[in-house]
Image 1 (cartoon, rainbow, N blue to C red):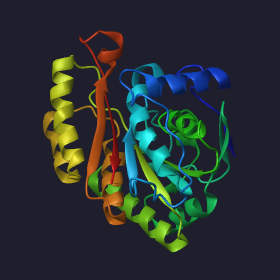
Image 2: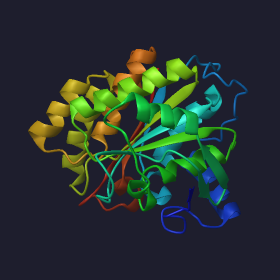
Image 3: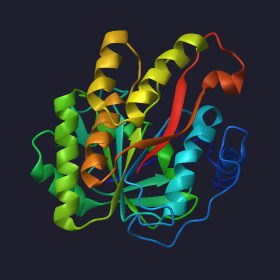
Length: 286
């Protein structure tokens, strides 16, 4: 199965050289880290700054969330790529099953092709009852795709396991996390997990920043129960809370003790329109 790009020319540039320039501009943007990182040679996620077990990054168009996302990728790049990135994302389309795994083939972007880690994927399907082999949820879904060019700018020498979560409750997130950890240990695969999510959607800046600061406090403490309760109690429109909860649970088992929030901003910081914004955050689990 070849998964063609869905949002190239929409969320990011279709032409490879323009896309590279855009990615560079995200890193050097005033909301970005300021410069372009250099990929460490480590292949076991043991770079100069110690292990990074996972990251959280937004998935909007690069013009809006790219500078924020680049903070997480800056650290992932400088830390050295693992063999496989597990990308956990929400299901915006409603297609597919509750938890859908794109389990074989390649994903294409303007920067080349990336192989699915088929051994990991098939073992994950066999290990869990909650994760289904399903292509349909991924065909039009953007929230895994947009992360790939940020990685490919530096190297195509990694594999991916893309998982969409329509079901995002605590129990489902825990089952996803446990399956990932078991398979990674059984296969002795070095992994890093990317939680793909935006935060508050289409609220005034004051409301969004207040709600998002509450979320960021829970994420930084890796308190998934309080995160879930805050979303429920305050009706916060964070789209990828299930992927975030699963990433918290999985990275904790790998050894993470906190999430270092690297950057928070909103679409209003880019457009100047603060009347209705979407919140974006970037962080690493260490």
